Image 1 (cartoon, one colour):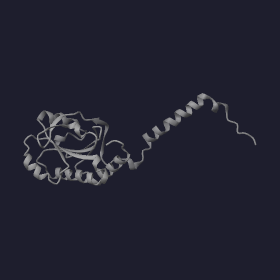
Image 2: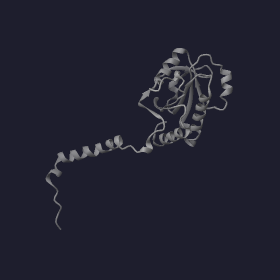
Image 3: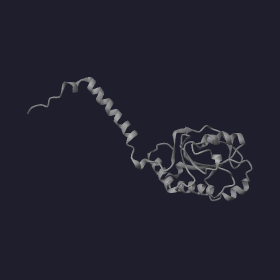
Image 4: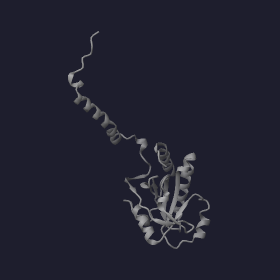
Length: 202
């Protein structure tokens, strides 16, 4: 039986190094240019993801709380005034339902509301939020609120513009995505299903 003759250039160390380099590059190129469509998010990505700097705020009980305390879980956050309009309540409802829809994985998700205004009737707000026992509400002085809300300014505008957006922060504290006021909750749910399936954090 005759042996297959391998060209001499293929057995050289230089050729083998080139092959190894090509093998290493292929996955990178494939990930960059051939991303499957089913990985496309339903939200609007923040690129690059933006680390949110910590700000000291207050909880509903008036106790000091660090915004960084939200780290370690996937966080949906709504930013708006305490005089919650129809779109505001719809967003709070969406966030609650999206979290509940993840079943055993809902422990990896939390949702929060940052109040922009100072004159907040806490007693009345607590009554209105009885259907949201897991909602974390934050408030603070003017300087603290500005320091935090300006970190959520996107090309679509600032939270103070009444955009009624839902913002998504990853467990490392990075703002990575946002959803418009009319976002389909089914799309948000599907995004979370993908994130929780592939993510090893949170």
